[in-house]
Length: 129
Image (cartoon, rainbow, N blue to C red; front, side, top):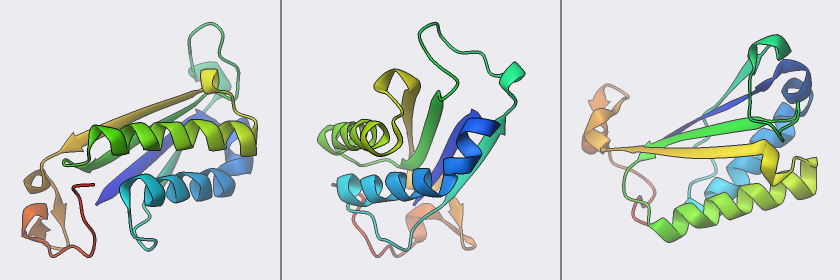
């Protein structure tokens, strides 16, 4: 299971949200061998006067937070980072300086899904990749 939040300045992020979602999902499917139908993206828009970021970043600064079941290998997580950085720069022109990615992993039993604890679910994909 995965939940992804994407944060950015409204005027910058909203017009490209569909392409951002497409890129993220393609990268997650590749790096984590994630099923195509498992897509849960939430865009959180921030007013320009309420988004403070480090010097050297621009108004295109984007933060991606990925919450997933624990179990992915370090290699899979690094592959996801690499793919996201490459695709955001190549496709959207958002530089590596303007993209931050955090992966939050929690045990399956910490998730409640479809009336069950996550560790009681029958999944149609592997978590340990």
